[in-house]
Image (tube, rainbow, N blue to C red):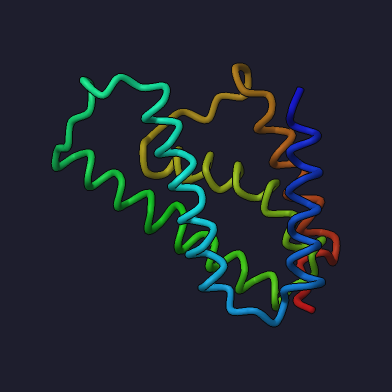
Length: 141
């Protein structure tokens, strides 16, 4: 139900960044967004999660660092870097490409089976990717 409004808000944010903040330092934007997100998530965790289950382990610290570095800092820095160099419509195609890459990596690295019957969406993603590659939407601006 919330997929369409979430997509619209994401598109609006991308357009606002491109139009009004294109000359700003994207590294600072990533840091401020990550800090704001961390504060909100930490507050939600304190309110809704029992503090008795809080444990700091090597695995939890490693997972947090991995997600912070690769899932946030590098991902958003790369996104903003691309936003300055590509058309917004082209960059929005990441939503179509990411699942295809994830399925391919799942198949190659984790030896998962590529079955079409339980996941018919994979066929749709492959068809979309083929259409996108065939069109000229991947041109740098």
